[in-house]
Image (cartoon, rainbow over all chains, first blue to last red; front, side, top):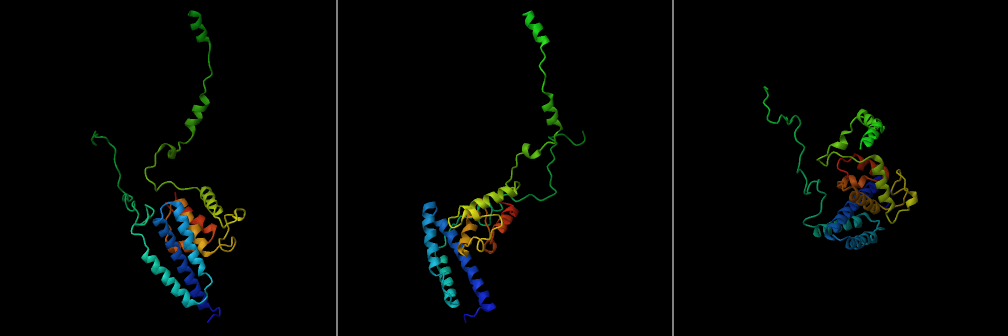
Length: 116
Length: 125
């Protein structure tokens, strides 16, 4: 089971990516919940300790179970109105001023007629 | 009074025509006289991006600032964890006011990739 075959390594790499994405979302969420920076640093270090406590687990199924639990906790704690950068989808400025279609031009002739 | 008028007529101050001539012959740089009304037009220069990204990486507490170069790999050269990688990328996102999608953020592993991503991003501030 613990022989380093390609399948094992591929599964470990996929789990690593899942953990990274979960940590990223959890950290972003912590930032939306704890707006003030000193509170955020506190909560971020608590989160990091929770992740580091399970760092040395080797069993694939246990890791999968822990990732599923972590994602369930993340879904439970998600902020209803997260801060998203304004121009990104979900932000406040998204598609506010789309670029006008090409080929349109404004002719400044200030009321002068064309046949003058 | 008359003496003053005579003296003023005699005095000739050399006019600085050289500055005027050189300014006229220079090609006008339109970006300085036109106000850019949208935030989609200005782009950062590569040196600015490199400087700011390196500052972010150097101010990370687990990183030794003297070993940071534009080519450094976060996990191999600086000995960081994958979670530290995530934290550095979040710090870069906050610095440049970007939003990097999750799939791409996981792939940014070294300073090189980070600098290229930020430089090629149209909305990097």
